[in-house]
Amino acid sequence: MMLPTFFRRTTKHRTLPIFKHGLAAGLLGLVLALTGTSTAMAAETLKAGGTPSGIPFTFLDIQNNEITGAMVDLIHALGDDMGYDVQVQESQFNALIPSLTSGKIDIISAAMLKTPERAEVVSFSDNVFPYGEGVVIRDDYEGNINTLEDLSGEVIGAQVGTTYVEQLNAKGIFPEVRNYDTLADMMRDISLGRIIAGVGDAPIINYQLSQGKFPDLKLAENYQQEMVGHIGLAVAQDNTELLERVNTSLAKLKGDGTVDAIFSKWGLQ
Image (cartoon, rainbow, N blue to C red; front, side):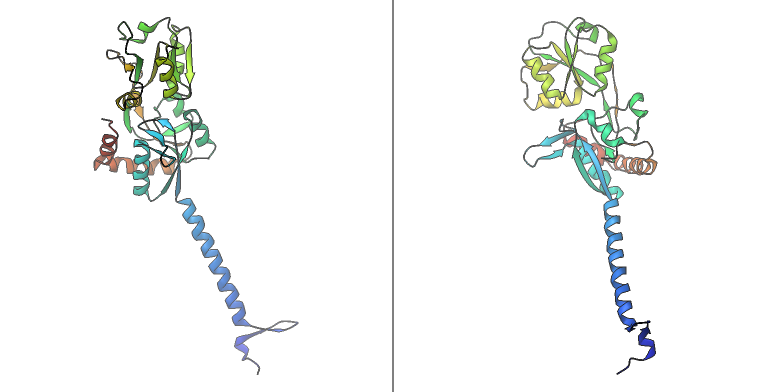
């Protein structure tokens, strides 16, 4: 039986029911819709970079093999407020900025001090946490350390990629400033007597000492900080939209006490 004209379409070779074309178009539309949905979902993922050795800001939790810490909690809280699914990727500190500028990550959420030099390469958020350096020495160290000049002539250490390396070298009073991949490596060499002292992030060093690590070490109590600043989140310089969203959410979470609660949880006041 011939289908009515409005149910068929005639070609040169055969008659095709028009509902077949409708079905094909519908399936095509469904595929495109699903593809679009997948793309939209992927766009809502925020890739954050964190270090495995910056306790308690960012560090590797060996029990679940994931990066955790105060800055990880913060970026997850910000992500929730901004509507992102946050994925934290492990990176050594000196690789964070290259990972950001190359597009491997979208944001740095680590114990990164805001400096003019770094601000020439990345864009920093509003201030997150006040920060400064500390001098770590052995418990049996004899003498007072009030300033870095008190260590003049000594071999000291610092973590590679931090601002301390350049600042210590610029002083011109140390025969050698040894670079270490992690603060733990530096502290181990101090403990073994390979170097006299090390300069690093005071909150991180203090936290590690409070956890019973390196019981033969201490922070120089009378040391007056010279390199005080603030931690900030960092995004690519051309990502102004993300920076604006981050600052808006950061201000909100500061106002409702979330930021203070996160840092208090990790023993950071």
